[in-house]
Image (cartoon, rainbow, N blue to C red; front, top):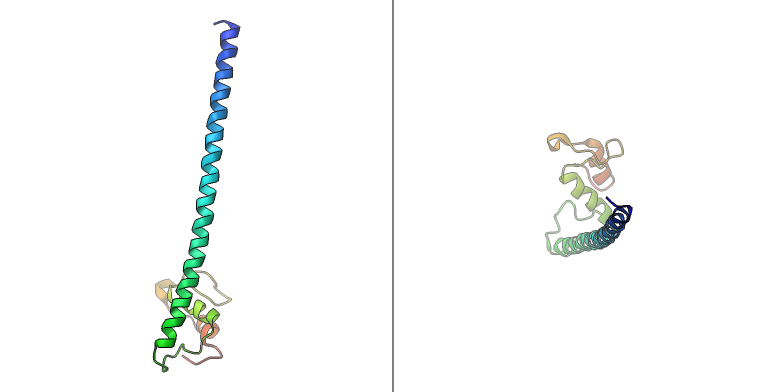
Length: 115
């Protein structure tokens, strides 16, 4: 094989790789935009769920035991009901078989009511 042919092949390979790299960068940028939009939509969705819950709470019966909970405590209550600890001792870990945790209940309902 001639040195010129080898050099030409290397140049073609470099051009091809540069094009592939540009394509990869474009896909990476597009994915970043999609992930950012997805995060924004998740946050907006959560805010809408909170607002919907607020509207539903005003329409529910006054005897609801969670009626006096603040937004943050309602959020903690929701996390707790989904099976996660919200207490300082085990925060974020899963509750096995959704067992009760006195620490979590104290964080959520502590000064509000006794359960």
